[in-house]
Length: 321
Image (cartoon, rainbow, N blue to C red; front, side, top):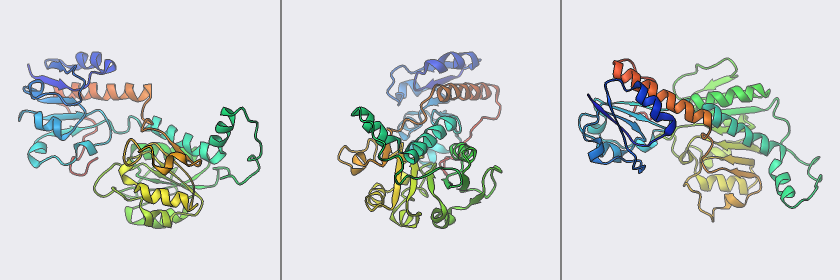
């Protein structure tokens, strides 16, 4: 029998993996340190857990398949050719899409309707209607939302924005193909042009060499004055100082950030004190549904691996998604 190493013990996952293990001996790593030791990985030809260079460094040459619990593969960047050669990498892409999309839309609606200010007034037991007729972002219906990164998460966001009556445009790396609820799909070089047209910009990009620091000063200068910036992809796509400057200059109406650079965001960062910024600590993917789907796909891939079938969610490890 062939052992498979599992890094993190997820109660949701354990029973399903055992059911699907077949002739494979399942080794559960209870250490919870995210990087199983060389001893644990010694005989493993499959690994289900969090992918990282440290894990690959501890793996034996017989490791053939790596399944990553999350969608983002940036923690697995920088692997040597020897660490990737002849190995199949899979991930949990699209599984957290619904949860992250709802989180993004919640931040957008909250900023657009001024909820944070009312929340602060509520804490002070203050009935304050002075803002009600004031300068507001206005209804989302008829406004343009640009999704940057039309993968699983971006598509879920686009569908929800369209349902709210927004005109949705997007940028994707691979092609101009996409669902019919999108008004226009552009390629990466069109980012500055589309940014000028958007009332809301959503970062739903994976972190790769190409996307690092893509939301920089030049980008924020191109954005429509008074637009909202929502970031649920990866923090490293945004140059934090440039975002701070754009907000301080009043170029943006506000920002909703589930991801920042760095993480955690330092306590002295000006973003914390801005009343038109909502910050959540990289939690948008967390939901019972996401966990359930993560467990199902890992277990299904194990079943396929045991049966010699085609694995789901295969990743191009060089491209990073």
